[in-house]
Amino acid sequence: QQQVKQSPQSLIVQKGGISIINCAYENTAFDYFPWYQQFPGKGPALLIAIRPDVSEKKEGRFTISFNKSAKQFSLHIMDSQPGDSATYFCAASREGGTSYGKLTFGQGTILTVHP
Amino acid sequence: EAGVTQFPSHSVIEKGQTVTLRCDPISGHDNLYWYRRVMGKEIKFLLHFVKESKQDESGMPNNRFLAERTGGTYSTLKVQPAELEDSGVYFCASSQATGVGELFFGEGSRLTVL
Image (cartoon, rainbow over the protein chains, first blue to last red):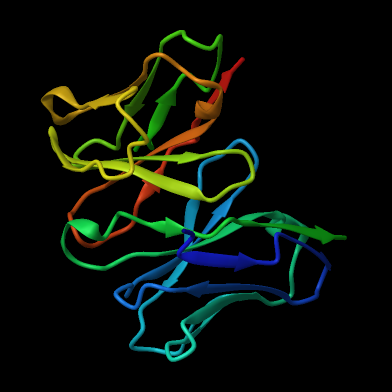
């Protein structure tokens, strides 16, 4: 049973456009929602994370929107650049205690940004 | 500061053989995690060490998988005997404190079982 569903599986965007990746979770005990970025041949790296006490978090061109009632969260990449081309994973876990690092990942989205 | 390092980067073995993957976490990180991504699927949690103790091994697929972290430093993940469905990328991650903070992932060990 997949507890975090991610869409789309792949996304092609023109340079300067907005990339949007969506995730939905089932476990209401989750209270930490990170996004990871992975380049080919590299490991996933933390991009940005949100906790359910806020509905939006922005870091540069990257924004997470969070809807607790709908159990959904999304990543928006503004002014997408070719260097943003990577695989993006959403994840969820229970913050605090020993379950924090036990991340439940979505299936990943391959983002391609054309010049 | 060195990141999480994993060895080997790629291993190709025959079904029934044994493979041992190694992970060196960031120095001083007490928490070490193993994850696995099977082709096209999500990255799945395997287990969590706090120092040398197994905190959570609920994600280990079966008893063909054995993880150790002797001395609380590096960790090994042994698959014996390997099956076709064990193919995938095995990631190791570490973090400094339990319950908070960023997980740092290694580049992964790709395992191909023929």
